[in-house]
Image 1: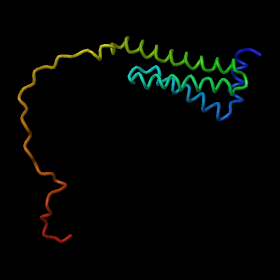
Image 2 (image 1 turned 45 degrees about the horizontal axis):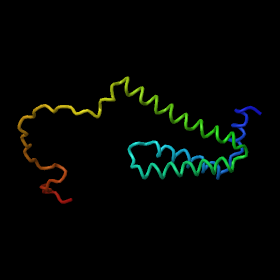
Image 3 (image 1 turned 90 degrees about the vertical axis):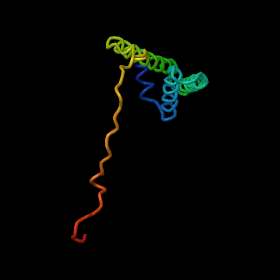
Image 4 (image 1 turned 60 degrees about the vertical axis):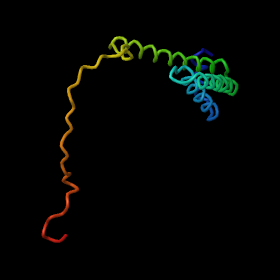
Length: 128
């Protein structure tokens, strides 16, 4: 059996528990590599990703194909992040964190208060 046939059999024979563990591993991995979270959260997410990955490979029928499946998921995350970085650098969005000087503003004149038409008092002589 080739590698791709083994991967297809893992995906075909996947139970709900295996699918949940694979999803938990992939989602926890995405939290673990996100630099906007604290170190404690990222460390916990990495531990959950590792435990869910071990559980997924243990429960699957072919453990080697399950490892390949998780490796392909990690490669897909890396490809997405690389393409997003490349696109942002091509568009010049990498300079978003730099400070931009603000032009001098003139004196702000407050607008005069006007009554709202929808809440005006009823002045008609006709009864409602």
